[in-house]
Image 1 (cartoon, rainbow, N blue to C red):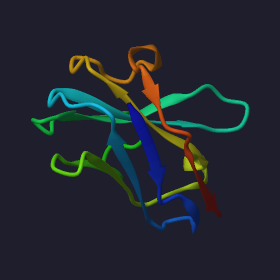
Image 2 (cartoon, rainbow, N blue to C red; image 1 turned 45 degrees about the vertical axis):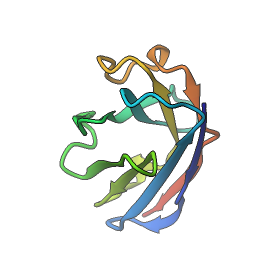
Image 3 (cartoon, rainbow, N blue to C red; image 1 turned 30 degrees about the vertical axis):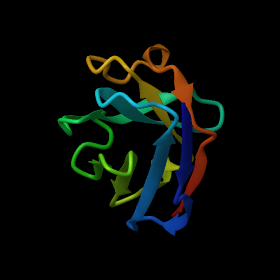
Image 4 (spheres, rainbow, N blue to C red; image 1 turned 90 degrees about the vertical axis):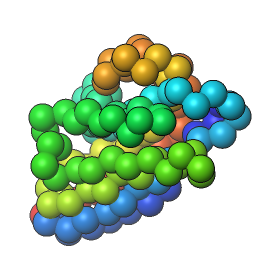
Length: 123
């Protein structure tokens, strides 16, 4: 399984970014992709999760109402639309794969990880 994130960058507070995660190297239809982030000096934390093929989503309280995760099944691509960004959203964002669709946002539940994309929000 390979995961490649893109779409990070520098944005002003209140702005928006859309991250993409392209997944490959597997053929099953039932899986989950999670988005996580890690700020300097902090532990990696879960942000959002989406299940294929149902599209069922889950969000951490810190991003609920601001972030939206979507899935393009045909392209095996997951998007994370991030709105109303603030300085606390600054982090490296990772997508991760698990075959266990009951997983929420526990880091240890995910077996494969991308390399991450940096998001920096300036105030």
